[in-house]
Length: 485
Figure 1 (cartoon, rainbow, N blue to C red):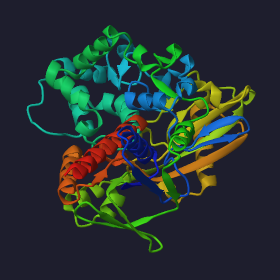
Figure 2 (cartoon, helix red, strand yellow):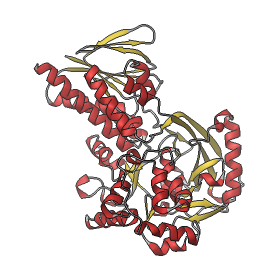
Figure 3 (cartoon, rainbow, N blue to C red):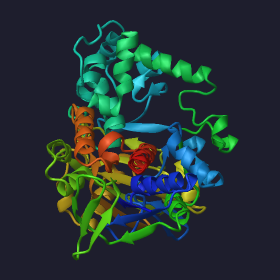
Figure 4 (cartoon, helix red, strand yellow):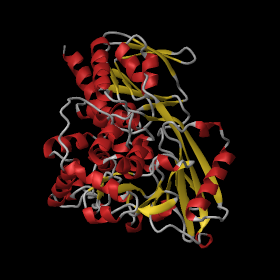
């Protein structure tokens, strides 16, 4: 019997354990799988709570429907009927510019304009800025090879105004990062491909949109018919679950009755060079395993394996802390309810909050009739002073800015604050090369140890699920090869 340890009880680790179990069961090979998590609960950043009829997400609230790993997992767990699509009223988003909310122009694809008429009408960019963006159609391709900063790329192609007023709040918000410090290849490699293939970022994004349309859906289309999800959801850009994202976590746990789950269990040391690996846990417990998957933050993996230089370098990338404040209101108390899904706040506005989502407009199932649920976001790269404030101070700052921006002066029914320390990995320029070196180094020194997680190749739920499955497949191949020898 193979003994396997999965370290990390977030969505990556849970997925890795699920697919490991499935691979061994499919081959009728005995395996003992143990998953350890140093915190008291499983699910990582996925945290759903219920209160007074509200469904409250304290971490992520949805996922991109076009990324199929999470759709495949949903189907394997029999959760298709639990999926919920974005409400049609939830597609309109605003951006704060010079203290006023402007609707995001139609035709944006990942923040890149693909329709000229709405872009030319927007008040987010000056006439000079619009002319500068149009130069993308004539500027030469980049000749240098290799990675570059996302912000440098967008400013080079579209100009500073489009970057700061449209692209930055939209794209950097995904990572809570500084676009001038984020790797283009690790975040949006399709931008570089568009430039090289079409000689223009705008032309490339239009071509990509046209390909999506000819494949049977618009640019925001979700899973196609073969995905097996309900037909009404196939064109929703984002999806979630009716009872919250914790539905996925609960289903994964229930699908693995023979996996040993140990919460509140911290790894201190990992050693070994061949087919056996010795793990020391807090409290002095030591156990031996045939294989290990480290689905933990990069800095945690580096602390466990300090003798590996490439992994130490990868472990040095920064992780940004963020928080969110959820507020519930009576619908009649909101005289100035925003007609859309929320708004984004560029860095240049100098505001405390970075974005606000009208959660119950996007996902009606999250609030009972006559009630409204909002979520405001705090924290990004270079703006970490909020961590010194109390929860009460965070709430007061949020309430003040909601009143100033959208005129909400009513007292909420309740507020809930969630702090997510060191939760957002920042991919620096050259990040994918660092990941490659770390994996090669680990494969040479400890071939039965595999790394995976948001700090490597994608922070969204589908990307983490993909990495968990890939890690399970890699370790299964290694262990079966060792057995064959």
